[in-house]
Amino acid sequence: MPNFYIANVANVPTDKQTAVTGALNILFTRIAAGQMNVSWITSATGVNITDTDLLVYVVSSYSYSLIKHFPTNPTIDPTSNGLTAFQTNPKKAASEVYLDSCLNDTDLLAKLIFHESMHNKLLMGNEMHDKSGGLAQETISASTQLSSADIQRWKSNWNKKVNQWPEGFGFIPAPGDPLAGIL
Ligand SMILES: [Zn+2]
Image 1: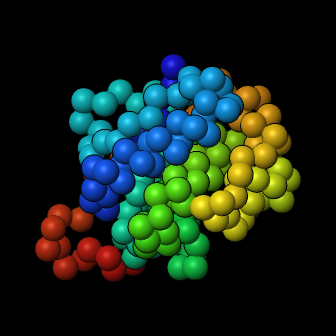
Image 2: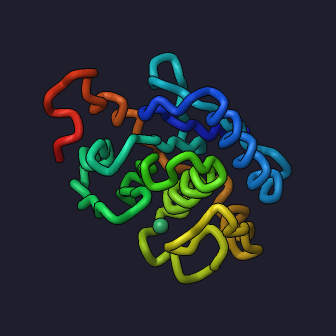
Image 3: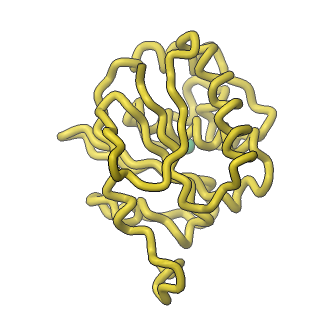
């Protein structure tokens, strides 16, 4: 069973982690009958993240982007809710969500995490947004529902191998670091 790791870089409290995990489990149950193991981690130490797993960082805001350090030097859009950067040879992807874009709405946070993980698994940029509606749309809310096209795309990519980017943990600034939050 693949693992879906959520990197808690933004101190999301335990009760909200549980709510987000529950919301993601509901989505993945509709895709692959619960065959996804969702868990939260705070470091990659001792965690074996394989190329069929997914890793999405939750950071406080775009100012705290980790993906800006991805080898392709992606541009961060301050108006976005999250970002996924990838390279195709070898296949490698890195995803993050900005916690301040969903405030305390755990349903929306779960769906933003899901949306970025979909970019990650499909290795698709903005071209993903227009094709299946549902949670692949560019703008989603807490009430946006999974579409049948979303489900089909997940199913056809379920076993695709995409290396993740646990190196992002190495770019988390230490508490009190004056460089924290400066792009
Ligand atoms: Zn998107």
